[in-house]
Length: 338
Image (cartoon, rainbow, N blue to C red):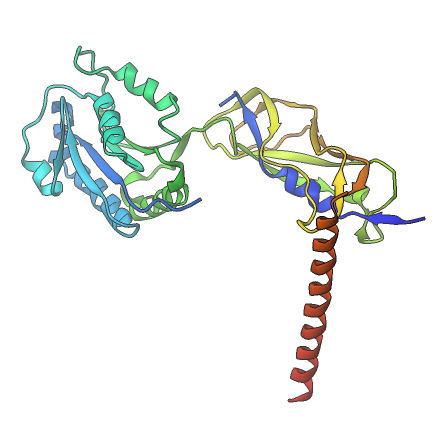
């Protein structure tokens, strides 16, 4: 009887990694970073103490290592500036209109926006702090990371927001977070806190048992016509260092078992399930005591009925054999020529 050898263990592990806990929620971007410095009156002590300069300079350093940055000052309005020195000469404003910074980022198609502010809420009619937070929750802002900056006793600290507007700048955003955390560690002295998204990439697989999937150290073999359905046991660890996950649904995102592109096999279905499907409580950085069962169900397999697929698979197999033979000959000649 014909038998099918399936590397199901690899499929299960690939399906396990992009798992999310929480509520419903490419290419490198070329440019578009901007720094917005709060110049309202409540910021005066931080300018006079030199703290603002100590923050802006390492942020500039990190940004210039990733393509450069444009600087702005804001209060009741947003103004482009040439440098930190120009901001230091500007008069202090009356209010902090954080929502206008988001508006400016959207107008200029900013990829990544940095906001340095004391986060003091404004209740004036021309600027709306609640609108700012509503914008942060909306689809325009893809990711939000916060760097808390401790101040002298008796004074509120500062907050540095790192906002991602363009998903194509994801890698740049991660590089900037790491670069700024390193360049500014003498001033910030706190870890960056991820505030958004909180519904994906929140947990990681920390343990798994592959015993059900292997036989004598090799791939498990399945008989022809027998449905393929197997499971592994896993635990999860929170990737948050400041948020507790409470009664959150588990979803497997962007994962589907797949065969090689030139394979002639077609699965009846491609389903991945987690049991149980919720995390009841998981503290920051903690690992679940609960063991979860991750199951991949392919159903029965059948052959593709397209003659074109048959030819493609045959030629691909022939090419692999040819490359394998050439590689073996190269290794032989390499050894014998020494």
